[in-house]
Image (cartoon, rainbow over all chains, first blue to last red; front, top):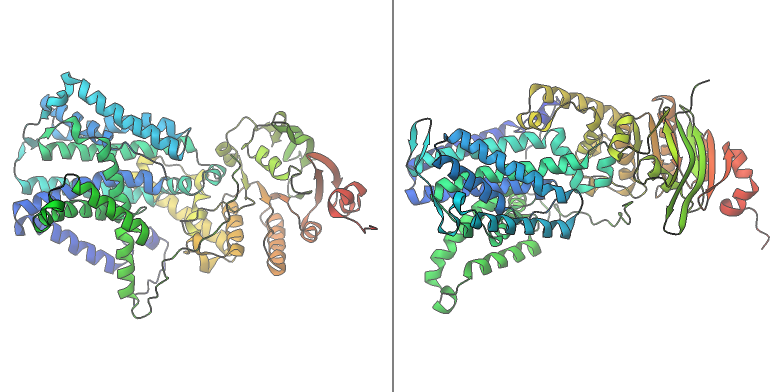
Length: 358
Length: 258
């Protein structure tokens, strides 16, 4: 059983709360760095997808999990980042600049999408973001001069500071580095006043205002940071697939991103990464399971969305805290063995908020 | 003669056909505890919402430290030094008590979002300062062993105290308490009374309080304003207002001969 004895406030500020945690994460990082040498290319390629979806999941988690807003058009930001990167690369821009521009373009678009969020909430915001997703998809299809429209856009090979990134392994390290930077950024944000402002907006807008938080400003920051992260993920996505077309960024993709973070566990950074890992691994699982299932089920179109829908329903019913929640429970079980009790993570239901002033 | 800290001048607000607050005027002096009493629906919380700028007055104005504040947004009112608690506790449920208090320090921050993203040394220093201050409030209200509890897991009485702590963490000049003792038992209400005394005497904060518990009102208040149906009934010390016949009829209920 581990007891954390704190003597200084700095200890609560640290990213890793105690030396045990630092050790395990260092081990994890070492394993991830060694992975390309130990595993075949296909496995490494799947890990790259996990990193890319983790970054966009991180962005969506920031918006939905931490700030409590809704976004049903997040694939649009992915698209903006991907096409910006592809277009700038075709014009000869270096990777660092085009990546930064992809983030910037997506971030600015996020500000625009955030404008309805200042006025509407819940269902209406969902519809507004949904509409935005369709607008971007349509816009990308029509702007054939820039995006290649429905015929698609092919990307040339990637080069960073003159070093060609032509193998799975090299791209793996690039995307892992970017993921780590994004995770650190979001962790810093959440332990600072801005992150607390986000959580305050999620939990009670009225008291957030009464505490001096400018709702408009922070909602806008949340939307644009979330969009910028999706833009970065989009840029990586573009280089991974080497080919972009508008039908990769549909409404269904936005829904899949939402399912991903809900299954991962809303309100935690681990949730974004677990969700992405689940997403990719489940897809692999379905592909291999297709051969084992009887043909009436296995060869059905729409098997994948059905399975994911079923998973989502199962998680919402049985494990609302998501994969990360389940992992926390398992870890706590072993940490405080044999004192674990079934109801430890259950939240007390309270019926206190009867009326709001607005 | 010092100037009043807060002045409400001919405040009125109307919701459809209902005059929730009708031509209410009062002054609150620095370092006093000023209570608003009256039946439910008298407009007491509405007056708080008018001061906090959550509603715009249809007529009249609110003056704080000599300046009109009704045109300001709610978050700007907080920056001026006005803190409030809510009748139905509006805490941040999925955050710990400590994090709730740290949000109270929000007005004192100097860093922008990108500095927070990089967690610059300045942000680190400010965070430690905020923590130190939040710990002072925790010690003042004896919340030490709830410090790291998620608010959603706390009982009602403790949540009330955390709500008060969060408002105090803002280091306000004026504190608006909306029914601080509702839902508290006798002992907790007494404790709340002691704390309001300490807030007035030790921290020098002016308090405006909406309250139904007349015992607490008599013990703590310097002056009392009685309201009924949006209009002023009586203004004076607690004893004067409680003896006022209009107040007795509308709210307190005297010795009944029915």
